Length: 279
Image (tube, rainbow, N blue to C red):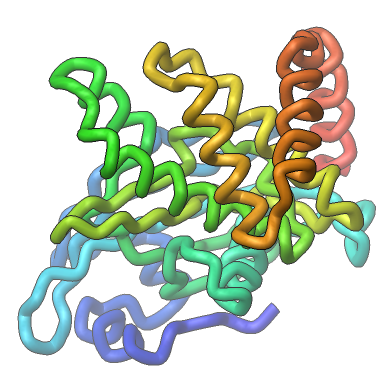
């Protein structure tokens, strides 16, 4: 795959001395900025993957914080590369591009490139956003927002998730820490991150069953049945009948009444897929 650089960032990267894969890979040696680990390197299967936060400056001196993700020997099998696999960041970059194409809010890619089994993905920081997990922890400590604002948040989240599924994508890990919320200027803006596991689903119903199951299994005490009903109503859209809403409600209630896949089965699949991607 060719190197991708967002046009508006070309001068900024050049100004910081980030002119090549090698420059970005060895960013800790760059004296133009400091790097701070957001996620300590995850080392497994003979490789590693980690995220640092860097504050770059544009040509006018304005700070532009970014997240830089680097990985080595973290490969996943794909249709075109079933044996050797491809870097997991390649899949994430492609999924970000798909969301941007369909105008589904997510992070903005700045740079992507790969060199053998090494890959780099740089994205803009979602300034002003916090994960829904962080918001809820704050609300549980200081008090939840007024009902009108909470309803707007539920409606917007349902709209975004609905758009994902309308385009036949399933996130596969749609939990509160991967949903980012911005409430600046009394606006409600949702952005979905961590698209590494995103997949295409032939059936919209299958997509919704996977993601809504993850989203609805929250342990938050303040999530009431009426909130879930409101979400489903907004998720299906203005044209949905009461029968459609009730049918999805019943499907989700049935799924939530069943225990999740056992950890033992999950670990068996994880080990199997790990062996596949390391071949």
